[in-house]
Image (cartoon, rainbow, N blue to C red; front, side, top):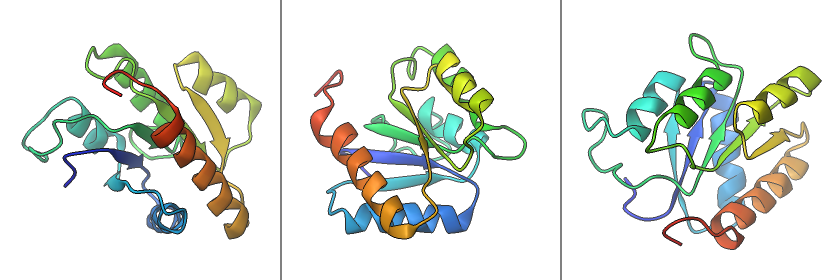
Length: 145
């Protein structure tokens, strides 16, 4: 588990998780990827629940959040992140297949830093993830950077 920079990917779809991790690897970004398979697991990790993984004391550089998840959707996760002092300013990028205007508006209204629609084509998806990673891992200055 990471003790330095990492990305937290919150997505319940194993195929999307695999594609995102592959795209990040192909982008040659030197960063670990930690996966939470649902919103509840992610909140336990991010809010410091050491029963999940005691090595996750460092917050990720960025959270990649899918909005279409059962039980606790991405908007609920985002609201919980923004309500908690530990994760209030954590960069969150919604990475989803939805292009609904209402979803985009809800994402930003609930505190998302960015909203990116997953391209269907893998080459385009890889390029989008590369640009996303370069910005949030290399260019963006956050507290502690």
